[in-house]
Length: 156
Image (cartoon, rainbow, N blue to C red; front, top):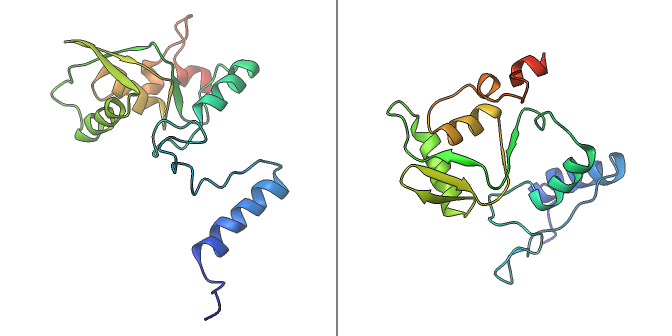
């Protein structure tokens, strides 16, 4: 039986790779066997890590970007977070944080404190704020620059 041209690989993945490499000039990597040795060949700490922080952070530092990446936000290694959640915290915030602890991104320091052991890129400033503050939070208002301006004020 001849292979079908109506596969996810043919219709989606190969088309996307062609666009990224030939139209945008980006590099791509086939990561199908990335974990075959038991560790990531690309430097990822966990399979759910889709951004290669070890490659992204040096580029960001070189460019000296002060704004969040798109609508996301990086919390750097060494940053401190509250451990005890507010009673009103959404369950998904707790689930995300539990995953970060399980993956070694965050570590328990003491009864009330967690620390980021690794840089982590959150999908949004609000998600990052909720994890750090251990409560529901609007990251556009919570995160502030040294001069007191919020992300919302800088974005505007």
